[in-house]
Structures are given as structure tokens and as C-alpha cells.
Image (cartoon, rainbow, N blue to C red; front, side, top):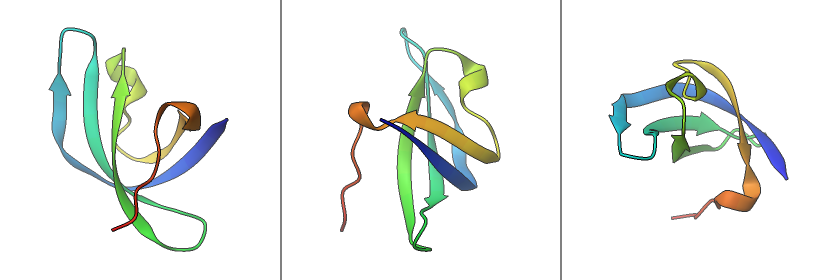
Length: 65
């Protein structure tokens, strides 16, 4: 299942590994709550600075505090 996340702020800089890139984001959900998520992408262009990002929910989950 795909889910669209609204990026409030990109946190830090993009990290690089042998398999791709990772970036941490502060995102907002439909209820107005905020969460910090880490997103992995094989391409640098898959990690935008702002706007929205579409993620596959089968590959990650949200964990409440």
C-alpha cells in the first residue's frame, strides 16, 4: 500500500550507503500529528527537500512514543 507523506522539514543531510541514500524527515499526518521518519531510496532524486513523498507502507511502519 502506498502512502503520501507531507514533508514539514528535511532533517540533517542525506546519508549515503553502498545500496543507496537515506534521509530523515519531520512529516505531518492527516490528523495534524507530527512524526520523524527515515526514508531510504536507491536514487538521490527520491529524497526531496520539501513537498510530499510517496512511500510503500509494506516496507516501513510508524511507531508511537
